[in-house]
Image (cartoon, rainbow, N blue to C red; front, side):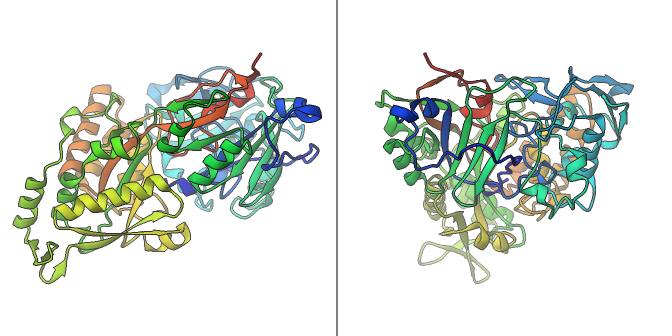
Length: 529
């Protein structure tokens, strides 16, 4: 998924005064007490929708909703709306959850098993316009047993299913009366979470207040504002001026705060990688020789060192090198000589200008990156420079996502992806041929039968060794026929005013800033003494 597609969530209840993004967060005097209970965070993107039915919070950490389960700081599953982890029976085909007692939505209505059933059935309905229903494809049936028990029946055993039940639960009595694609719930949802939305000014900010009736206890941070600041440099400037309490920043800008005694830097490891999509429908990027040559031409370590200031790792595929599912034999070095041999053998010959050509067609394509994203810009420029050494002309161009999206079928994009929890979560939507061109799923329109088989095996088998072998095969197949050029895995960097305690980081997905970040557990923060 690209960073544009961050899914947000909120529930309206406009009774608190709005914290403006231009007020100095740490100001003293009469406003000092109020400032001590409020946090203003600068993030790069805002939600497209506020409904979990369309994707928000599907990986957890929604501030306005809860799932049956949640994750702790070490990424272990823990009960949330459920009393306990599920009871698994029938050889891994039945998952039974018992709901926590006394949980209410922010409008005062009680949570029941029917709300859970409604949520999952709506997500899986063909009429609901979300791009993640394939992640729940194993679900055959969901039913309520009384008010407090939910039973999921799967078509086949699916080992990581419990981790999918971090999906936020929505109230049937509100969302059930609306079209899930166009209803008011998309901008005015009601949830069970620690915060409710009091104001959303598109392109500027979302402001939340603490839910005093939250089942987990009333948060000490009473107001939370997510200021939408697309430009990295502007976000850093506003943080430095005191206009923001904290911000997500690229590594080079986060480093400029290292001597600031009033701020603390947090570094989160992630599954978030940067890669260049190589659309299969293009006569240049669809050529396997071009793809393999580009894979061998890039200097991944230089990108980590120079672009990420060391805050990351080379990406040899979609899984990070320190992941237990990573196949170590796919780690490889830059090899321009081998890249040249592959291109020569495929008929891509060097011309007088140093750019290769085949049958009169130059080895040339356009690579888009989203405007304002300095990290992607630097990756794109470095990629183009490396590609030119192999005789491939990559023309880098910035644009808005509105411009990029219609071009994704034929033009390359400097994209970002990465999901946590299980290899199936990120790899299936990235690579399976059935999802080619499905929004931001399989953006490269990749189609490799060996990869499809590995994905299906990894999804359906319960044998850990068989799963590991399948994902090893997948990574090796990608090396032989890369539909993407994988560049780097990025550590996420955050800088915050040092006036709260209890801040930690989790291992994060690609989607970060809005829900992920040190504020993943903001409801648990305590004022620093």
